[in-house]
Image 1: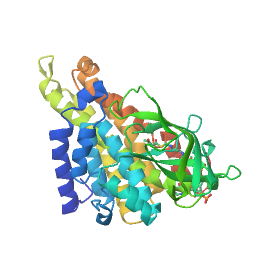
Image 2: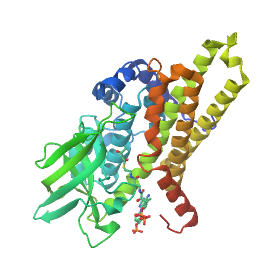
Image 3: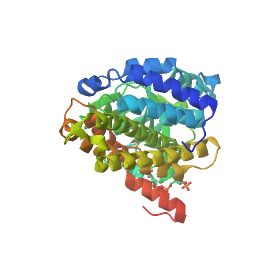
Length: 383
Ligand code: CAA
C-alpha cells in the first residue's frame, strides 16, 4: 500500500476489520433476505466509537481523522454494505454537518446523542422531482414567530424509517435560487413528520430507504442549521465528505468480492486443474487487484486532503466516480469467475453485485461527479 498509515490508523483498521468479520459478517446474508435493520450491529459499533468517528471527544465522539474513518467504513462494507451505508450517512453527512454548522445548543442536544449512537441520523435532500438537481426542490419552510412550518415530501431517504432525527433541506425563499434553501434538524415524533412508503430495492436490502412527508410540521426556529439560505452549501459540503464514504463502501465490497474470488479459483477445478491455473482467470484477478488498488489510493488522497484542511471537492468526486464504477466492474468479474454458482444465492457474490449497483447513483450519480470534476478543472460552470 502506497499510502503510509500511522500507528493509530492501523490500530483502528485492525480493530474494525476483526469486529466486522467476526460480528457484522455473520448475519449479512440473512439480513439481505429478511431486510432486518442492523440495529444490533450499530449498537455494537457505537460501543466501539464508530458512530461519531470524526466528532471531537468533547461531544462524545472518537476524534478520529478521515483516513481512519474511511478505513473503518470500508471494513464494515466488506461484511455488510447495508450496515455501512447507515454508518456513512450518519457519520459523514449528519454528524459532520452539525459539527460544522450547528450552534452549541444543537451540538449538545443533537450531536452528543448522535456521536454516542443513541440517535441515528438521516439526511433528506432528494424529492420526487428533484434528484440530481436539488435546486428544483419544492419543500417549503415558512417562519411563524419562533417556529417554522414545514411542508413537502422527501424521497429515497436512507434510514428514513429507523432514524431519530433528520437534516432536511427546504425552500425558505422561493424568489432566490441556492440562497433560498435552508437546512433544519427535525426530530422523529414531531407532529406532522410522517414516514412514508419504504422502497423495495435491488440491493442494500437491510438499509431502509423511505419517503419522508412533512404536513404542517411545526419545529422550533432554533432547529435551523446555519443561517437561513445556507442549506444548499451545507448539503454540498456534507456530500463532499459523503462521497469519500461512498468510495470507501465501494472498496469494501470490491475487496470482499476479490477475496472470495481468489479463494474460489484455488478450489474450483475444471478441465482437470484448478481454475487458478488458467491465464484468462489470472488476468481477471490481476485487473481486479489493480482497480481496487487505484481506487484505494484515490480514496486516501481525498481523505488526506480533507484531513489537511484543503479544499477536496474534486478529489472526493474523483474517488467516488472511480471507486463506484470500479466495484461494478469487479463484482461483475467475480460473478463471471464463479460462473453459474455466482448467479445463485448459495454464494455471496450476487449480493455484492446487487449492493454495488447503487454506488454509481446515490450521493450524486457518476454523471454528476463528472460535472463536479470538469467544473473544478475548467472553473467554468456547466451542468
Ligand atoms: N461545497 C460548498 N459549496 C458548494 C459546493 C461544495 N462542494 N458546490 C457548490 N457549492 C455552492 C457554490 O459555491 C454556489 O454558491 P454561490 O452561489 O455562493 O457561489 C452554490 O453552491 C451553487 O453552486 P452551483 O452553481 O455549482 O450549483 P448547481 O445548481 O449547478 O449544482 C451540482 C451543482 C454539483 C450539480 C449539485 O446540484 C449536485 O451535487 N447535485 C447532485 C445532488 C446529489 O448528490 N444528490 C444525492 C442525494 S443525497 C443521498 O444520496 C444521500 C443518501 O441517503 C445516501
